[in-house]
Length: 91
Image 1 (cartoon, rainbow, N blue to C red):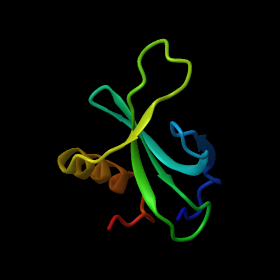
Image 2: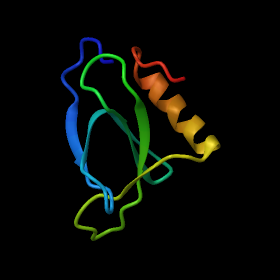
Image 3: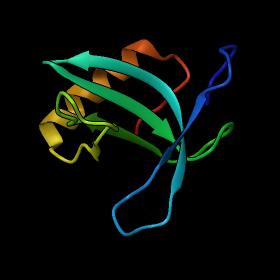
Image 4: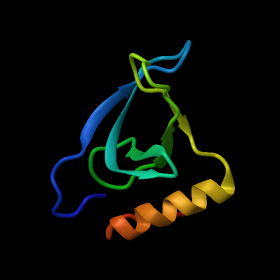
């Protein structure tokens, strides 16, 4: 998924009541006061990509991320990531 860029950072998410899940961060941005990250489930090659929104509050010990599901917000953030990355194709 990433051309000549360095290896993506691997992060572990621990959903409430679920098994930990590892993702690779492809890019991050800040829009409207929120941080967004574009993650994938594979380090290299074709995989599923997700846009996650950081909804943490000041003072939270750990980040709290949710998958962006609102179509309008998803489209806007995906457009920003699309402009940032040449080798990512959103479907």
